Image 1 (cartoon, rainbow, N blue to C red):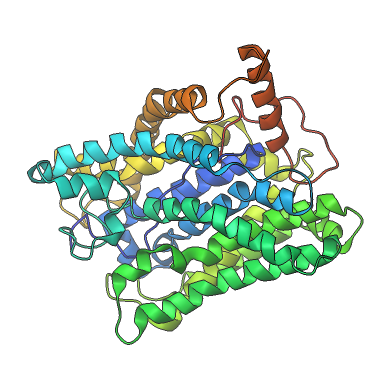
Image 2 (cartoon, helix red, strand yellow; image 1 turned 180 degrees about the vertical axis):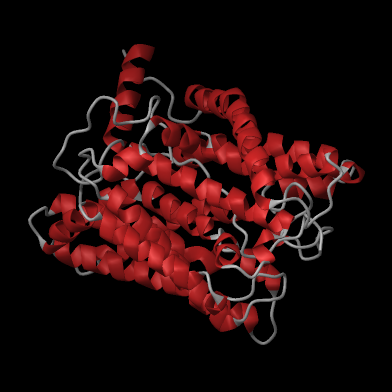
Length: 449
């Protein structure tokens, strides 16, 4: 086994989204990113293969991918969910995809180029290598030149093609859910119920796809494709749907449910923690590179989904009042780590690989804690540089050059900026009504998912 080989369940990291949110959701992103980093340190040092309970827990840091996907479904589906109940219009597909591309691709391209130059110089002349890696196509290669989920320094990148596929599919999914919700008309409750049923059917695709992955023979590369993870995206979309439903009918049962969840972070997190402990057992499969089984894959998908949604939902449904959750996850340190979490994901495996190369260390050597204490600050430093030198300039450029930037008759640039700021403000703050967003509650600059 080499440092480049990881379990197929190893997550990639977070991808920024299009809507603002409570500061505590930034903190959740930071937690998820650090879970991923911890898993990869545990893998390269061999800690995850130990016999202790701690080894079992760090070996299941891939729960971070479920958290990321739930967040993506939650935040990106918000405008579609609001439109179901007449609270807005669905976003234009061109603008939506342009913003997604500008938020994801530039920093990804820089990190991938660095990985190929540093560790795979023999592949630099291969057009196929550049096309499949820069084009987010690596998981679809039927005969890859690497083993596991990716080559050295890049094996964490596999979930970005999954995210990209979801981005492309979301306008169609949103339109499909809206069509089913509107069938035979009906009031808010009928539309909401039909939409929720549609999302349940979407999530069930994961289990059908897992079955197809194992029968008649196991096809491991299929386990890296979007259908396997639709349950996690659908859970996030369901939270967004419930929030929009509650806004449309605050006094109804869904409104009561959402307010109860939003005020019960402690109970929800206890459920999340206990579910994660159960998931960190042999019930969800081995910790080695040996293949999963059908039932282990099903249990892992379900348990990780429950862990993630009960972690995220009380924050997403919060009324915005300061509390323990906000202090723990919405403080300046966690907000900053959440802000740079995408670049932290992109670069931390390269940091590990460079560290092991410079120190002439072999895989499965090095103490877990010493390596972790070196990798975390170095990764945060590189992530900070990537965020401010690549991510932020690309985002600003996208706003200036993207579709939908034409000014109407008599409209000045200042008018357009006010309009953009007003639209962005509608996406910030609590998903539920009750407390108006206060100054300082939103991330400076409207940090996106």
